[in-house]
Image (cartoon, rainbow, N blue to C red; front, side, top):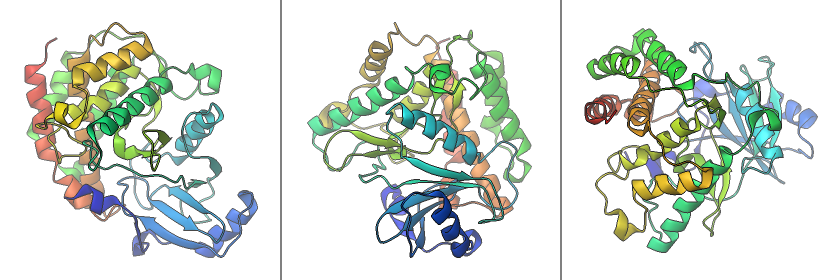
Length: 355
């Protein structure tokens, strides 16, 4: 699948995800300063979980994120949490879109939603940053590294997010959560490598780091908007999986790009990184550690296996939504096909892990 073509731009809103646009317009007039119609609604091509819409008016464009209609897993699609974390981080000057309002009244468009600014810039769908020079690629990677290090530098309590999750025991809880979610999504079926990973992760847990920070949960190049010309992160998007947790786990998730084959998600595996101007995994980790005052990430191998498993569990959830008929993306079926190779990759990493 050509991820850039498949995810770039908008399309007509699908029949299943349509709503009363007039009702939305009235809500926007009441809750968004400066809003003035007429309103034109389209649906972004990308996005596997929370349906995302572009709202165009003569004077401005906005983005709407909503909980999908139909049956959903408990705790999933929490747009209220996305809104809360973006509002708090935006107040600190962290690069997120400005949020305008949260609506939890399902009578407006059928599910809860929030509205934010449409940030100008570009989304890069492939981790090799096609079309850039080696110098430009190096600068973009440095910007990504600096941005996640900045996120992990905030004291959650000091920015109003002290209650955004539980402190301590993050990795153990996450292993339990995603194992339960995988095992409980019966419509998606079972996978032998995933079954092995559930057992392996439970029996090889590392000591708890004790560090608790705001973490993104899905930090990768296609979940951010870069400046149209400069190597600058203008906005970090898709905060659905954010919580308080282990920042090292969050960073290792970002580093999965180095282990993924090129063409699978945002993978760099098999590419000549030096000729492309992309730092090695070792150098990229070292830069993050310098920025955050760490000597290293001792549990890196375990956290890599866990994050590969977690991503596979997310894909397993997409497969389940397909079976239930409420997958929000038109190419969800293509994404679901990577479950087996991704699970196999995670198990191979487990067998090679140095613990």
